[in-house]
Image (cartoon, rainbow, N blue to C red; front, side, top):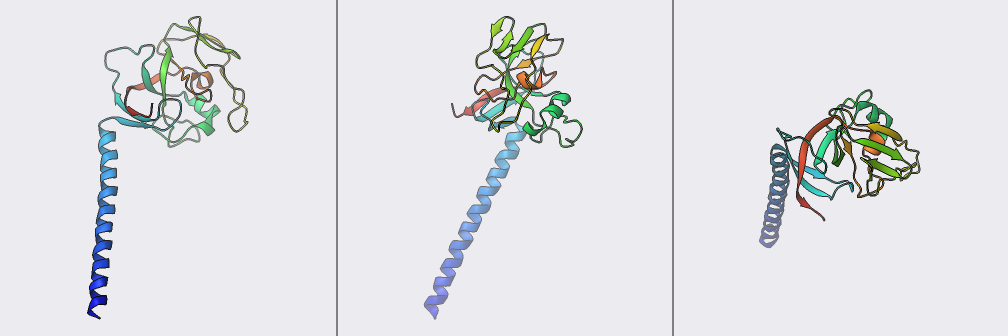
Length: 192
């Protein structure tokens, strides 16, 4: 009888230790996410950029430059047109998206004043063909997508975002230029 009681006490102590460990682990994870968010750490899980952690910083006085990695809000018309591709986030989402949408995190390929041409062969910025830029006519699920075909000169405050990592990246080929650049991103830790 005493042995059974002692065994039960040991089992209870092990269970209590595991429970404490679980609470410490979950609490630590929540604290890490909260501190990371306060310090401007962003998580990228999409294939458009190397998956990993990025540090966000304010744009400040330095203008956005070609090649900068930025987080930017898509135009609400693009959100409406490409609604199924957006997840909830901090950018305005327009009608039917009261929770907003996630910003696009992409490199800047075109700046105000650049001429951008989008045709079935790819995207040309300032006469240069961007790598892996041929727009798709169907997404991975076989649904039609409508790339922004044509020629345009980027106006003041307009930027063309392009990720050449994967052909299915939702960038300016489909969403058009962006006007609201939220922040610059710098890789902190990535898979690549």
